[in-house]
Amino acid sequence: MRSVQPWRLSLVVALLLAGCGGGDPEVPGSGSPSGAPTAKATFTAVVSFGSSESDVGSYAPATSLAGNGTAPYFGGKFTTNSATGAVWVENIATSLGVLVTPAEVGFAGSSVKCPAAGLGAPNSCTAYAQGGARVTDPNGRGHAGGALTVPIVTQIDNHLARFGSFKSSDLVLLVGGVNDLLDQFETFAATAAQVQAQAAAGEITADQANLLIFAAQSDAQGAMKQAAIELAGYVRTKIIANGGTYVAVVTLLDLASTPAGQSAPAAARVVFSDLSRIFNLWLRDGLTGQPVQIIEAFDIYNAAVAAPAKFGFVDVTVPACDPAKISAITGGRIADGSALFCNSTPGAPYNGMRAGADATTTLFADGVHPTTGGHKYFSNTFMQQLKSFGWI
Amino acid sequence: MKCNLGSLAVGLGAMLMAHAVAAQDNVVKFGLTEYTTHSRTNGISGIGVPPGADAKTGNATTVIFVYERMLTPNIGAEFVLGVPPKIEAKATGTVAFLGNDVLDARIVAPTFFVNYHFGSSGDTWRPYLGAGVNYTKFVRIKSTLADDVKMSDSTGWAVQGGIDYALNKEWSLFASVAALKVKSKVVASGATVLQTSIEFRPIVYSLGVAYHF
Image (cartoon, rainbow over the protein chains, first blue to last red):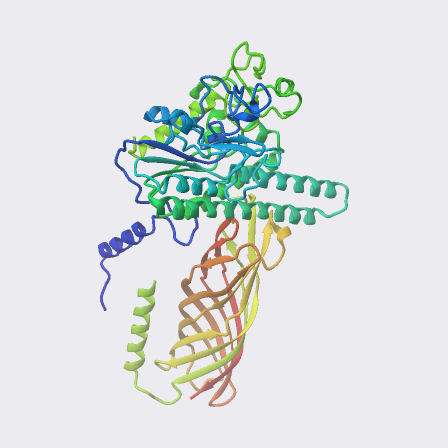
């Protein structure tokens, strides 16, 4: 009988593992991407897909001072808006010495594609991310209220339609799933509250209540899985297949420690976090073996909330924007204190900041979005990861 | 473990060939078996799984076919194969509300024993003890919690004790009790991915008839 030499066996095992991107092939999401470039690049464009946290001003016309969609605007980004209030995508572009502008600007039915083309920068409008955008569903959050919410799949298609393909000097940044998460969590939380009320009223037994809540949780998980698989598919078939070379996919943030998350009951907060984890598991599974890098962002809010001073924050619990002021500024149209309408310019009549709040030392602008300081924290963290990939 | 099974088979073959054929060297048995499990898991892990979630496997009845080849007057090599019984697992612990049969599979469990038979071939009562190896494969796995469930194969020790009661020169009745080491890693991929390792700790009770030729 032939004996298998241990070193030969371990070589075979090593080759098998290398071939499948590590991890246990029977355990979804345990592998990792492989084959992304490791060399430094001279980037000529930042191409960004995603939703509100990456939106560089798609909905500015909704914040027209004149109220008719024309400039000047007092808001437009989901942060503490000001002349210097940039979102993380812009911060990264500035660091790399490239200009990035919105791919489409508009609200409530009318929009202009690549407004920067009229200003002599037709190649800069590669920021496709729009507030409310979902991965695949064009009917995103706020769509009924006038938000464009072009889904990520169409954002990528729009880039391909305009530029034909991706360039090896594009830095492609993709954050997806936040609005899918918010939709799923809201549905789950509403069902859970209703079921608990029924159980409290004695209409159903505790076991029946548990089963109904379990089913609602499984449905939400299934929807997050589907969104992640779709997103990973778009990365493979639309971005990589069309020349995307420096592709960084940001994992879905845990929103449990945001003011919106903190307002949910503790049991629901666990589900909130788990839905992000489920999304990230299947996203990672779909990107296993693919030549991309994953930017780990799940804990980015949690880390700052756990150790504010370490990242230069003083307030990590109360939103910087004041819903009452924003409601007054918008004539009562916006009651939820959305950062889209929040301006932090000192002394301006349209300043929507809570008294005493600072746009750089407060982490949250509203229930889920970061302030200018929060965006700086995001871009600093992501830049560190881009450095660790060897890209910059 | 495949190497081990292979060498065992080769060794067994050599033993069979080395022994000169004599009268009544072969025994075939047919019996009823109660496959009882006393399972333990390392808990169920996965995103969205509450702490304290667990599962427990149940019992099953099936029929077994046994072939034993006497290598010496007292030592026999035995191969046991049953019609694969369906084992169900129910949810326990903090997820007991999920109920019975959250996971089921049929087990294909060929088992080799080397038995030592006390007494000699003319005795009415002949107790025996055996030790060997069990291989268990899980097939037709279904779960209400996941559409894709994988269970790893198990290879482990097996021991048994039994007794034969001779009715005449050819026919006897037998009863036996066997303990097996059966362990499987479970990965259930649905919306979330559940993982656990189940030790089934089966005790197998069998009763049947044997024909000696």
